[in-house]
Amino acid sequence: MPELPEVETVKRAIETAALSHQVAQVWQSGKKMRWPIPADIDAALRGGTITTARRRGKYIVLDIAAGGEASPKLGSPKLSSPKLRSHGHSMIIHLGMSGSVRIYPHDKAPERLTHDHLVITTSHASGGVKLVLNDPRRFGGIQLVPLGEDSAHPLLKGMGVEPLGNAMSGEMMKDAFHGKAAPIKTTLLDQKIIAGIGNIYASEALFLAGVSPKRKARNVSLAKCQDLAAAVRVVLEKAIAAGGTSLRDHVQPGGEIGYFVQQLNVYGRDGEPCPTCQQPIKMIRQTGRASFYCSACQR
Ligand SMILES: [Zn+2]
Image (cartoon, rainbow, N blue to C red; front, side, top):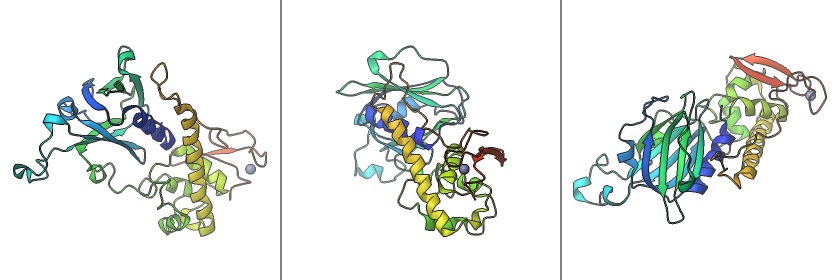
């Protein structure tokens, strides 16, 4: 499942490849993903300009401002109702379990692959690109909302703080964990508290902070919350940097966005020696998800 660093890497790749490009055509497979792709998506986006690529939690948001003739004149008295003003759309993209994005220079795109569900062809003075969303399991999907209204969408509304944002801190965590009897590992995965920490980086951050995944969230001290907030930032930023090194050639010959998972300390390493104390790393299941930890280093 794509985690925050991969989503951030995909976002940056789209930003690098397609920012300020005009949408020339949108093709869709017609297959239902997590949600149906709007039937009129080509008409809705064609002629628009990709003005921003953003990330919120594990969602990518592309702002596509309405272009040329399709765009109503601003300040026109006939368009006083905000609903009638079509300034464009924000496209919320969720990669789900198996979603991926490929990017090709427009003149080097091969035939469509099985499980390609959305292809956005762009034009730009520097040459257009094709952005391809592929998803074999179709747990991912897209939603179109009026431009800039993504944060009010049910998917994003009520989402917690960004783990790399300024609101993330030990104090914030301590407050959020108040009265929570659930294990800290499970609580870290709660998107309403912190948005975008997935299973891999929850285990890695707890290892770095020396906190047992089994500890009740309410019993994690402020000092440990501060360690944990710092650890979350470190593991995510390292992973993004690992994606970033491969991003220099972000459009691979096959269109894939280069991404290498960083060296992990505990995740997926049960039975292997702890990198700090050499005791075997343990694996437990918490609400169905695997947690990896060192019982000697993490308390
Ligand atoms: Zn250890």
